[in-house]
Structure formats: C-alpha cells, structure tokens
Image (cartoon, rainbow, N blue to C red; front, side, top):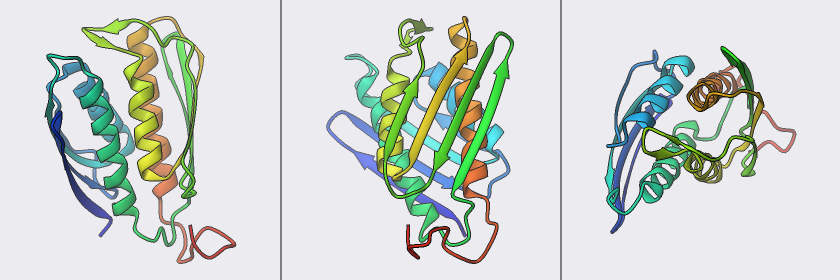
Length: 192
C-alpha cells in the first residue's frame, strides 16, 4: 500500500496530511486558506491522488508559515508513501493549458532535491493569498520529498489560470512519475 500519514506541529502551525498514491482523486482539504484549498484539491483530482489535509496556523501574521509547512509536510508524506520506490516510473511530465495559459511541470523522483521555478508572474494576490508563496510551497515540497522539480510557465496573463494550470500539471506529472511500471528500482545504482 503506497500510503502515508505525517503530522507536523510547531509553535506556528499544525499540519496533518495523509496521502494515497493509488487514490481515485478524492480529497478533503482544509487549510484555512480557501484559494490554497482549491489548488490542492485540483492537484489531487487531476493526479488521481487520495489526500486529506488538515492545517491551521498563525495566518493573522501572514500565510507564509502555513503554506511552507504544508509543503514540508506534503513532501515528507510523499517520500514516506514512495518507500524504496521499487517499480516506479520515476520521471513525470505534464503540460496543461487553461485558456490563455500554458504550463509545464517535469518531475524526477531522484532522491536529489532541486527546484527550477520559471514563473514570471510571481507578484500579486489571489483573494488575499500572495502568489509568491506558491514558490515557497513547491520549494519545501521538492526538498522534503527529495524530488527534482521543474515548473515552467510558457505564457499566461490571468493569475488564477496560471496557478490553477500549474497545480493541475503538478498532479498529473506526479501521477506519471509514481506509476508502477516494473519490479525494479529505476536507477543503475540500484537505489534512489
């Protein structure tokens, strides 16, 4: 069973996440940040993941602590659910359009964390959420999942369309990378 559950509690946040890599796109997401809930829900639906997120934090200060800690916890949960990574495809790729926007996400579950974030529209707010925090979310996620993650915005104007397409593409690329296709470790080293 490729499932895991991780809890993270600090003086600033409380995050509980359970993840099933072989889900059916079902989710229960409650972060106290409605637009972020929407993004995580889209990621699950399009990646056919099973995800439960319960998170709260010092959002009266700002959203940074909570968004980053959700990324950390989701990364740890993903790493735990993958286990030894036996049989996974390892690489995942998705391009997703949304109206005037085109995004691309490429993943390597290599055990080497690295984030490339080519998104020109890093300023602005969606509802009251600064979109700059999405880079922090993906950095924390890639670091703690030990994944190489490339996110590219080819073009787009509307911030909602841009970030919705990114989260959909991430979900689809993650599903692609975690798909079981053999009984071997996908590395000539014999370990990832």
